[in-house]
Image (cartoon, rainbow, N blue to C red):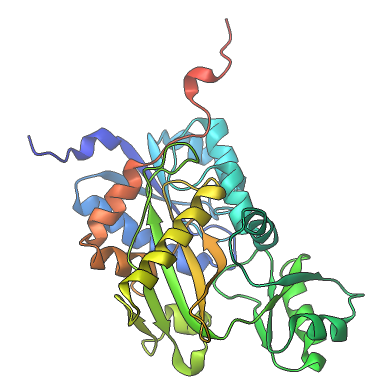
Length: 327
């Protein structure tokens, strides 16, 4: 028998689609994951959480699931809580880490508390003194919803007079909106693979990618649908600097309690090469334009290898034996 036995995974559900603003991307990611698993002989089945309810999910009797959902109702701890209740092991971070990582404000507060570098920020509301925010953070600055992904609702503000409109655009998607100091420099991203805990860490950072987007605008279209963006892996940075960024991202992953896999976005300040953590994605894209497969390939992992390795980490926060059972 070969070293790899796909039967050990049992019946696998690939959860995709969902109800978030990133549904379209999730369907592309999910179908890519589904094909990769089937190519490896895994008994994998598509399950659209946007079209089916939890009763339908329970009825499938999956032995484990691969979460290929992005954004709310899939990446934010809500689905993870349901899977814990159903006792179905799942890929990616648990309930708390998923909820924290989805919330940019809470993520930044934890990183700051742990001494990790992240751009200065403030939360906005309808009665905010926008001129004061511009003076405090400087211009340009970034305004974005606290709990959205894929740059949805994000605005780069170059004049204080634009702040109110940027806030209104973001608050239409999320009542929690933050304004963030703009870091001028290279945009980097680093995936992490593996189970990581604060006590015993088996997680590892994958190679750094430098993102070079047209006019430095890495928006939704440039992320997923256009071929103009360049992904440099390895990037034109010293080995020591790349290793510094990888260590920073791994620590950012661990202090949030992430597990399985994730991808962190980093700005490398031009004037002094200091890295700043922007956010971390606990269910990153797996499309043809996605960054985790690009980095994994540079580390010698094919797309199929990557998907299988992630699936192998599927687990639960709560061990089934620790749960109450009727006498």
